[in-house]
Image (cartoon, rainbow, N blue to C red; front, side):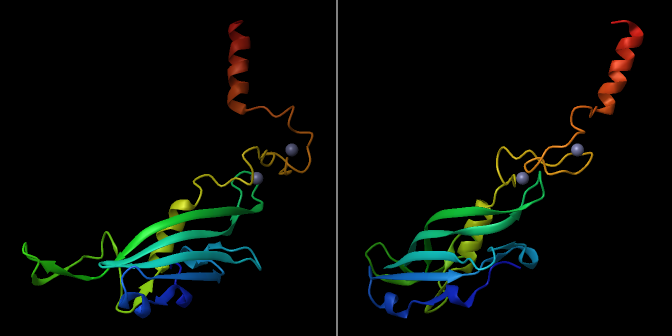
Amino acid sequence: MLMDSKELRINIAKLLKKHFSQERISVHLKLALGEEGIYESPEGKNFIIALLLESAPDGIRVRGTVKGGIQMECARCLEPYEHQIDLSIDDFFCQPHLPLMTESGGLEGEVEISGEDSYLLEGDYIDLNDLLNDYLILALPMKRLCDSDCKGICPRCGTNLNVSSCECRDDYVDTRLEKLRQWLDREGV
Ligand SMILES: [Zn+2]
Ligand SMILES: [Zn+2]
């Protein structure tokens, strides 16, 4: 289940009446993205979606910014942290049916645009949910770290090493390395 907010379905009847007219929209909402809403806005903080819609003869151009935090868990220390997203959007929604012109400029019929590689207008509405889902999923980090210098947790005692240190670090020996050391001793290397 991806983001599906009614507030992102916007009536554009007025924009469609006149080419190159513009409308600003600003939506503040709590983000819930991914299966069962695994990516969420932190408590009490909204995503801010500020876009300029502009009508063109063949559709609506959408430009603007999407900003906000997403609650995540650090892969090293397992503590929750807030990942900041700051996206620039510049995209286009096509009319599902475009008039097909003959070479002399006459109207020949209509072509149907497939919805696979472009966003489509739905009558007098533009639905920004799919567009925002596509942009946000690409903006999620591959490596989830609260900080690039996060020290993680001690594999022995579980202490969060960003917060405090523990005694087991110095005598912690990788068992594979220990076997190698014993072999080297035996061989007298
Ligand atoms: Zn961390
Ligand atoms: Zn420890």
